[in-house]
Every structure is written in structure tokens, then in C-alpha cells.
View (cartoon, helix red, strand yellow):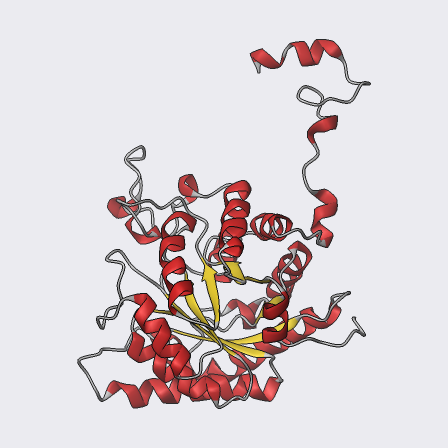
Length: 352
């Protein structure tokens, strides 16, 4: 447990990069503890030790923020799976797990984040739904405040209107608020604004950090993140998914895999995205480029794994604990350069 003085989010961002490892939904689904589809984080209650271990792995890899796993842990999602009675226990447990994991870390104290997200019931043509959504956020933010979080992350919004409701509620916490949009295939928000305009509106309404997360990979999120950086004066977030998206298929949901004829519905999203996964060096290159243009809040969303986070940290000049085991090919029997290696193995590399 660290005894150093804890710096706040904005102080850290002013001084340099802050990394927030995300991706709990996909990683815990891969490990067999969470069901794809509804993506409700019941693992928080069913297997809290597994959630804490993933927090530990992201911390070792270089994450500065431990984000409580309450993504999709809101009332609408719990209603969908018939477990609204578990809403408060799930949220409080997730917050407690995140705090415990953060307190185990050595070195500079880590930041603990509460998390709220898109509800999937917002409709900009339905003025009556706003009160229901506000109530949902008030519950989650209230529990986060009770837990003593250092910031609130409000994320993955396809609508400016919904993001504004989240921001208004989150600001009542008294801690810094990060608000990020998810841009789908068309590249704009569902209620009309370009993302840079929407982010400026969020900044004017009091958001401390604005930007983008999820949906798009490094190649297709960065052009929009640059526009946001040019439009606002506050700090900017860029938290892509680690998938190779491109102009024709700019989001993970739109990716297609013609090389495989056995995927249900012929749609790789969300559980057959493996062939599209970015390697660690692509993530490092993204982090370096984003930081070079003044984007200081960085992370990786759905699909992230600890080696991605470690590479991001190393690309930003850091040496987290997991870097002890970063690749060193000099000792590889065939591709290495150590003078004690057998020459006949190195001569055979062309046949490998």
C-alpha cells in the first residue's frame, strides 16, 4: 500500500499522460465469467476474486486509474436479466473491489473511478425518458460518492442529450468528470451534432475531460480525436477498442470476416473479433501519436488485455511492474543474438 500523497486527475493530466485500462466486459467474457449479449457484470457478485485479479493485472501493466466495474451495471440492464434486486449490491461490491485493488498497489497512489454509461433507452424524440435515465445515474453516482471515488467516468454515449444528463448528475459528486462518446459507423452522434461540437458543449457545461471511447479502433478513432482536441481547451480522452478498423468498416460492430464461414449471422462482433485484434505495437504507436498531439487521457476499451496496456505505458516512456517481463528476443534459441547460442539453430531460421 502506498503512503505517497495522491495527486488528483487534473493535476496528473496537466503534468503528462494518464492511462485508464478498460475492457472488463470482453476480457471477463473471454475468461468464462460473463455472458456476451446482455453483458451484465454479474461477475462482480459471483466471482469478486476474478474481478480483483483483473484489476491487479491492469495495474501491473501501467494503468493509473482503477475503474470500478459498474459498466452496464445500471437499473435497465439489471431489469433486462431479471435481477434489479441486485443493483445496489453489485455497484457497492464493484466499488469496494476497485478500492481494495488500488490500495494494494505500491508507488504513486492510484485513482479510483466510479463509472456510468449509455442506458440504451435514451431517445432524443422522447422527452419523457430523461427523468428515468437521470434517476438511474443518480443511484450509481450516489454509491460512487459513498465509496469515496476520485473521479467519475461517464462513457460510450451515442447521444449528446444522454451525455448531458450524465454530466449534470456526475458533476454533483464534486469530483472530476470524464465524458466520452462512442461514434458508430456514420461518424456522428445520433441526435445530430458532430462530435467536436458536442464535446465543446460538454466542456461548456462543466466536463473536465471530453472525448471518445469504444466502437472504433486506433486508426478510425484518432482522426475524430484530433478534431476534438482542436475544438476544446480542456483535456481530451481517446480510448479506442484494440481492433483493426478502417474506412470501409470503421467500427468493431461493422467488421466482416469473409475468410470464415462458420460465424453465427456472419457477424464477428462481439465474440469472433479475434482475427482483427491489434498487436501491442499498434497500440503503442497509437498512444505515442495521440500524446504527441496533446491528448493526455489514454486507454483501451473492449478487447483490451494487460499486454496492450503495458505497451501503451511503455510507448509513453514508462516502466510498469509488468515491464520486467517485456519481450527480450536476444536469448531466443533461433532468433536471438546472444553469443552463447548455437549457430546451427540460427542458420536454420530461414526454414522456420
